[in-house]
Image (tube, rainbow, N blue to C red; front, side):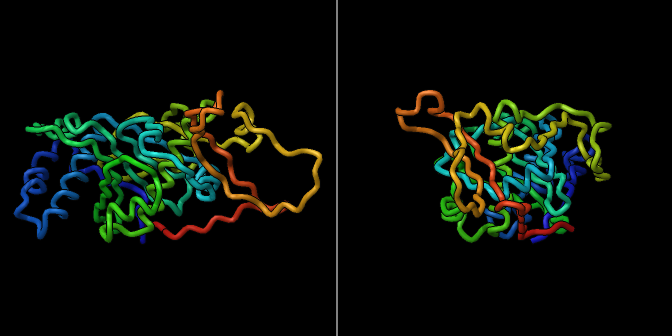
Length: 278
């Protein structure tokens, strides 16, 4: 699947959004209710984002490490949320751009001047574009964060490549929740790798940059110790992110921990992506 590098926010800007909304919110234009729901949520997500959202720039070394990292026994309820509308812009040119929205239903609807007549369950909307066609994954945002659970919930409505990118964004959130790795606010002038995409309608919102730190700096202070003085053949290791839930853990209980991947000795990490960008 080809994910586009830039999202287009033209339709949701102040001068245009009501005109486009009148068409998108008309269910008679869709072949089935699911298609209508996805289109409406995608539109509102972008509209909400240009009003309240933020962008996070992810260094390539960070996404390389996280692509080789597994989530272990982490639930949606434990997932750190840096902002309820966050655009993930990856420095890696092979990765697309993605929008994750976890806003409260009432505030979400009000961004398009809609009023909810009843209470709605909070959802997680993950938006991206393929060949200029907006796509959105909508999940209930609860329970274990596993590919198996998401595929069971969503069925055949999504492609596995999209789930992989959603998981990568989840791992970015966890990485950024580590205090020493907290993203820093920057200006567009501080972007050094061409992170000023020339796309119509791009909102002028706060930008956060997530930087790479060497493995030793990440581990220090997380309650982990390294094996020393023992010789053995080391063949590398995937990274992992997990929570400590047992009561025997005093300092780490309830916290998410990240151990980055380690390549085999004298070898650089190899990362293979299933997706490319137009």
